[in-house]
Length: 261
Ligand SMILES: CC(=O)[C@@H](O)[C@H](O)COP(=O)(O)O
Image (cartoon, rainbow, N blue to C red; front, top):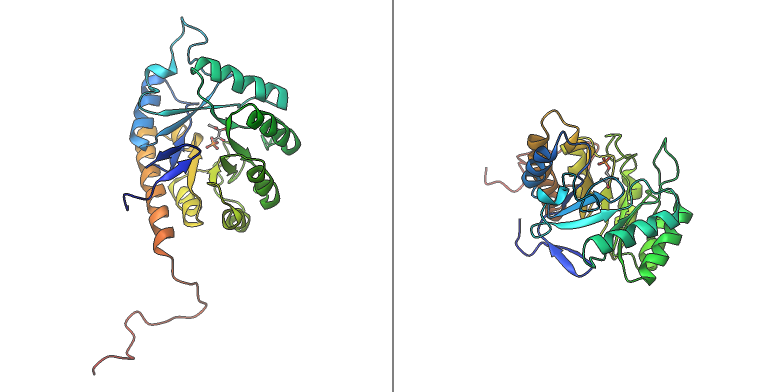
C-alpha cells in the first residue's frame, strides 16, 4: 500500500481504513485483542451503553482501548430522536475532555434500525453549529448523502445493510453513486458480514468501512479482525489498481496477435 494513501477525516489523518466498534464481545480482553489485530485506528463507542468513565466502579473500556493509541469515536447508538442524540454527543465531549469528533446515528425503529433521516438532518445541523465534527450514519440514498455533506458533515456513512444483519452491500449502484458524487470521505457503516463484503465496499471506491458485529460475533473474533484488516487493504488496492472491464465473451489470456511466430 503506498505510504501516502491516507484517510483524512476532519482535521485528522489515518493509515487504516477499517473502523471498528466495541459491542458484543465476550469480555474486555477479547475486545482489546480483536481491535488490536484489526489494525483500526478509529474505534467507535456507544456512549449510552459503554462505560468510559461514567461509572467509576465498573470495568472501563478505555483500559483496553486507550485514547492515546486510538481515536475514540463516540456514537449515539440507541438514540431514536435528535434531542437524545445531541445530548449524548455533548455528554461524550465532557467525558472525553473536549473531543469533538462524533458518529451520529438517529434510529427510526427497533426492528430495522434504519436511520430516521429527518431527525438525522436536524441533529447533524445542531451538532455542526455546536462545533462538533460529525460523521453521520445514513441510508444508501445519494440525495440524502449529498445533503448531509452540504450541511458540513465531515464523513458520510451509508449502510451496506441493516445493522447486525451481516448481509453485505445490498445496493452497490447507490453506494457507487454516493462515492462518485462525494467530496468528503464515504465509509460503509453497518451490515458487513464477512471479509469479501468489506472488499466489495472498498472496491466500489469507499474511503473506509466501519463494522462491529462481523468481528465481535465471529467464532474467532481475533482471526476475523485479521481477515477484515486484509480485506479492506485488498479492496483498496484493487480500487486504486483499476479493475478490468466486465465482458460477455472470452478473450484469450495469451493472445496470438503481435507475437513473433
Ligand atoms: C458499532 C456501530 O456503530 C454500529 O451501530 C454500526 O453501525 C455497526 O454495524 P454492524 O454491527 O452491522 O457492523
